[in-house]
Length: 302
Length: 327
Image 1 (cartoon, rainbow over the protein chains, first blue to last red):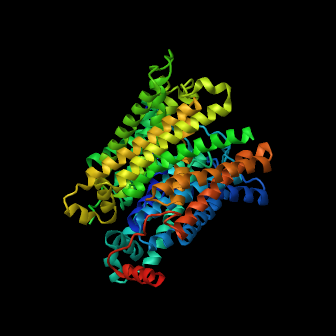
Image 2: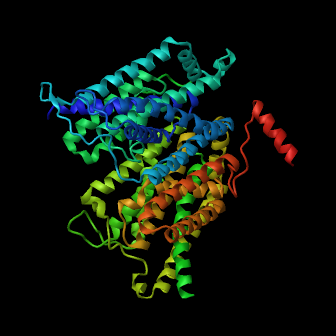
């Protein structure tokens, strides 16, 4: 078996991990599993794609940055897309989730997120049709880097971007007052309120981080695979599995969980075939739930 | 006129099969508070089990055992119940969200097996030649549709009466007690996990039976019949009817199926053929928004169980004040 699966696995793992950060944060701070998270991904990607084509229409064709397949328009569009996805998450929270949360039944919120997910995805299908589209149709030549592994410049750039983002979120969570407030709220919500933490602002930060990272993960899928309305929904099970494997509430855990699942999927593709790929996350999920339900870095519930 | 009766019978048969699934979900969610977002998987398990047991021998895949239809239905219920029990045992000692995520995974895996395990399920082309209860009457569509309706009605009625009886039995009261106040129920010596696994398994068996009925009614099944949209439809049916109420589950199913089929016909009349797929996705958007609106405005549906009240804290007083001012 060729070692190529390591690169493929790390890339898939980065996408899963970035998405799983949002899942694990909403789960630990807002205390519900958000089935609409995958659709944030897809919406962010389509928004980015729309901005890229808008820039293309305004300034004409822009040459890509040296070895990469994309130029500055994509970077600008990505930032706009991240902001858009964060706003979408905030909006959905305002009109739907926060109202249901105040009624006090966690599982109703989960169900509402399921309904919202269905509506969001179908709205994409309605607007853009279910045909897949692409950021760029150019084919990149993969460079050999030894041990029979090949990697394209795009892939290197995206892996670096993931590393920077994960490090950034980790520092935010551990070194800033906002991050410490988020941790406090996830560990003991009642106590956090008593010491005067502004719950509403923590909730907003949670949605902004989750939405923005979901957009990045979606754009990664868009660049490396393709853009289609179901792209986020298909990532839902791997993201949940990664968040639970890493331990709910843990950012390093979510990323590590994502990488493990990505590597396992890539290995499974080589060993038993691509059609069974989606079963990998389920098997890992079941194994975690039976053996160690709090995950790798999880904290036992109080 | 005859056409209309025929269509009415066909419509009601489909709606009643849906209401059987909704009844199963009502046992899991309405009565016990177990969240199942993978019910399409359990319906598929039932359909495929029954198809495998009853179809004539087929050289390209496993089985086709040619057994009687009733054996197929019983097998579907058994396998569906076992699958649900296993899912429940894995997750019911954990937080309720984990069950939701796991059932979601079950549906994904069942879909994967249906698509890829050609030897077992026929792959993307599905299984055909599933025996139909009154296949001999297929020459006269009206009689055929009416006899199908009769069979499905009888099965649904039996399931309905059994569930009504169960929910009033001591067993059903334990489930309600667990849903309302787990700690109090446990302190009375009831094993929460044991009862919940039972309820989840029975619900799964009912869903599998509905899948089997549907398979024998259409005579052909394929993986496309069991996409997440099915799960979604059934949830909307239960929420509209009101979770916790068996009559609500049946009426909600018929109502939502009428809206669904009606808006489907409407879009096929209003939109040109090349826009049909788009219009269909708009239909799903409308139903998704409807689900969210009902959850926000009328969380107990049309026939919902009595509202749940928090027993302590600020909200319970607010709720108590509100309900006393209403009465």
